[in-house]
Image (tube, rainbow, N blue to C red; front, top):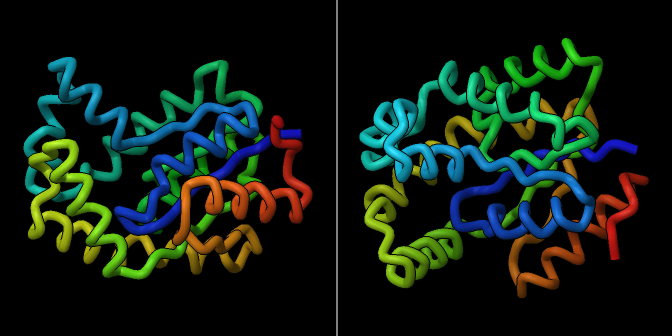
Amino acid sequence: MTARFLIVGPQGSGKGTQGIRIAEAFGIPAISTGDMFRAAIAGGTDLGTQVSAIIEAGDLVPDELTSAVVRERLSQPDAAEGFLLDGYPRNVGQVRDLDAFLEGRDEELDAVIELSVPRDESIARLTLRAQEQGRTDDTEEVIANRLAIYERETAPILGVYGTRDLVVEVDGTGSLDEVTDRIVSALRERGLGRAAA
């Protein structure tokens, strides 16, 4: 049985951490566009040079570039039986790109995990993370800009996937273990995969 998931939620919802946990539980790779871009920047690659200024401004990398990076990653052998995408697709145009890619491989998504977290909690979590990790890309202005972009561009993809009955809404507040347990339980209730113990 395959496990092809998206995890969606505003910045600060914990989707990066939960994505890794869920991917490990289901034995699939967690694929984060943010991590791929940060690694490219740290490695000084051509991609890193292209996206560095965009990310530092709090803007989003263009769809064509992002979709190309994701297609390449999903074509690797470890993603053949499943994957968890974090940070992609982030708008309706990227949904179309992902649909076309999966249809070309005779594949489809199994679930879209929506982590619901109040806006003020997202901001508080991001501000704390910026202080703890010394992340210069997480200023208050950039955080507000990213949340506004999420609400304007990314939240509508949930409507698209909702019409396909793929969205699994999970309360993203509480401890890490509580949220992970909620996600795994919700996926199992839909008959998806047997998470590893």
